[in-house]
Structure formats: structure tokens, C-alpha cells
Image 1 (cartoon, one colour):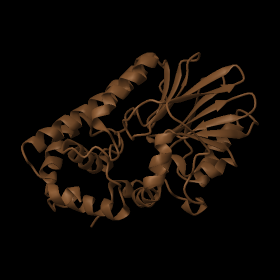
Image 2: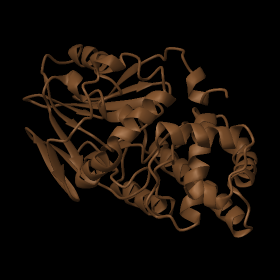
Image 3: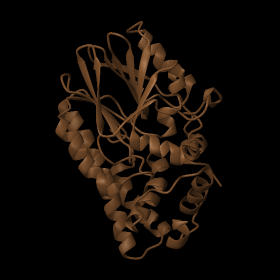
Image 4: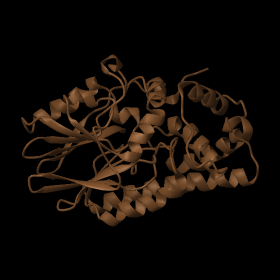
Length: 326
């Protein structure tokens, strides 16, 4: 069996460190997972930690070019390993996450860690530096506010979309939003742990904030209100188009392989040029298939399940609904 599409993506990406406003920065890398940086009077807040402590060191190096202050807090937008396992690379920061995100770490954090390391060998270079799972030190239910001197940063559990715990960081005075994977730009949303039926309403809540600058989970920093709206609506179109198409296949009683082939043919002309499209789509269609059949809580991806799914969808082994449901 050939490996995941992401296994062939071993080329280094060019990192950008864009200033969004005084003391506000976006760490982006050509479609790799992004991080945000907020410089406060007493320390730095990092939004999303990167995949490994070794990779976090590059974020730290960029921070050092703009401030001598240490990283005191890390906000996790959700539980995925590529976002959280680098947290120890920032020293001993306060780690903030929604209660729903912590619950997901309890339920599936280790399985997700093992799964993602297998899928993304380049992103997890230096994985020997990971001490284990990243655990929040502080959790919240709906929202909390970080006061960084006079600067207000709202940490909001905005709703279910990419995961059940999705969190954004919103600076209302500056109108800057760190959106996590709730919003992507020019990058394929990963939906393997998604809540498709909720995603559009969550994007409504994101749009209502009125961001004029936005850091998506993947893709370049967005520096105009028009680009922010384009990213939100592009993410909405992708997730809505995909789930609608999969539900149509389920209504016809097609098996997962038939639905996958049909959905790929439908989505590729419009979205196939977005980064990680070939990697994400098997996971996306599998989750959409489950949700369309009434499985509200996403099944846990394990390294073994990843391989079985990829073999079935990319190499022609049809999975009937009973088999796919596990």
C-alpha cells in the first residue's frame, strides 16, 4: 500500500511572520499549521503551539526578533496534535483550552497523537522532543478574557465545526481574529473530526465578529476585511458542498467507496488546488458519511483505522456501511 498523500510532502515550507498590528503577529508557512503571537506588557501569548517542541523553537526565534519577553500563555484552538504537542517548547506556560477540548484530549488525545505522527512525517520531525500529551492548565466553558495591560483578548469557544472544542481568539479593539481551523484560506479544511451540521452556524458567529484581519488555521494571514469574508465563505462553501454531496449518496444507499469516488469528482474541479486536498478528502468523506448516517459523535481515528480507511478508499476496497461504522 502506498502511504498517505501527506507522507510525500517532505519539502520545507517558507515561513512568514507578518505584523497584523502593534504587537500582533501571524506565523504562517505555505499551508502548514499557523500560530498567532500577541505581545503583552508582561509576556507573550501564543495561539497554537505547533506540532513539536523543536518546531516551537522556530516560533520562539521569530518572537525574539520583535520582543525580549517570554511566552507566558499558550491558547489551544483545539486538541489536534499538530497544534498542541509543541507546547513544552515555550518553557512552562499557562495553557488555556475550552473544557470541550480538554474532554477530547482525555477521550482521544493519545490515539490522535499516534495517528497524526503517522500521517505527517514532515510536521513531526523532532518528535523525540515531545514529552507526551499537552494538558491545559486552565479551561473555560464559553469565553474568557485575557487582559494584557490595556489590550483585551477574548478567548471564545465559538461552536462546533472542525472539532467540538473549537476556540478563537478575538481582539475587539484591533479587530484581529486568530481563527484556528474553524476558518481556512486556500487550504482544504480537515473534517475527520468535524460537526458538519453545525459548521455553518459557527461561521455565522465568526463572521458576526467583523474581523478586519484574520489568521486562519492554514493559509496566509488575511489583512483586509474582504479577505476575511472570503476565507469564511470559502470554508462554508467547501464544508457545505461536501456534506450535501455525501448526504445525497447516503440517501441513494451507496457504499462509502462509491460516495468517496463521486464526491472527489464533484469537489476536485472547484477545490482540488487547495493545499492538502488529496490528504484530507478520504478522512472528510468518511466523517461526512458517518454523520449523514446519524453518528453525531465523531469516531476516534487510530493509526490502524487511518491505514484501513486509506486502503479502502484509495485502493479500491469497498466499505459497506456496517463495516465503515466499525
